[in-house]
Image 1 (spheres, helix red, strand yellow):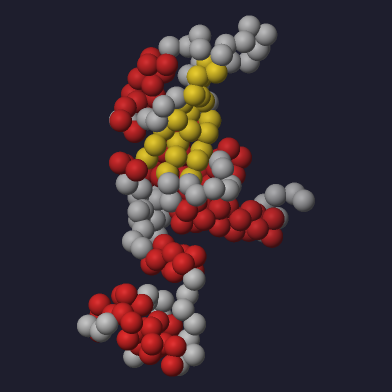
Image 2 (cartoon, helix red, strand yellow):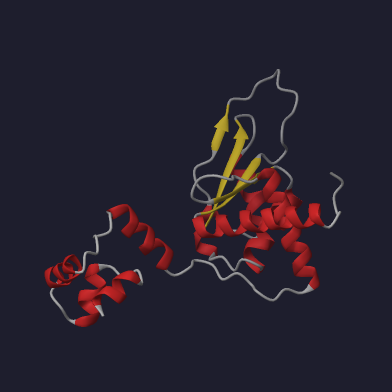
Length: 198
């Protein structure tokens, strides 16, 4: 029983609690069966994979939701972070940001309180006014904003962004993987079905 539980990714302490046993006895039992203890790294990875999801991805999508999924995934492919631990989509176009946030809310079922917004702007712009603009346009809370990055205004810089660049962030590695997997699958389907000229 102990062997089976351990091989089903329960930790030593979890097995001890489940069976009402002493933890030392659990590990001695595993040693007698020549089962090596997991490293801390492996244990942490298992705990992470077994922890509850912070989002509830919608499985059955309407036609309009499928279009939203495709649009958001392709937007992320162009403007999103592909590495790291969180979903991070950055853009200066209000409509692109609105589409991606709609995708997170309606398709991914993210927790609103875990959403974070990071503003990148210039010193000659009114930071508070920009944050107010984004709060109103995207229907988000001021509390979800992190400290903005304010770059010194450069008179030689020709291109500026009216509302700054906004990052929409959601810290969940599993959601990031899901979005990247959707992107990979979608790209393969488009190329396979002749949807995109090679």
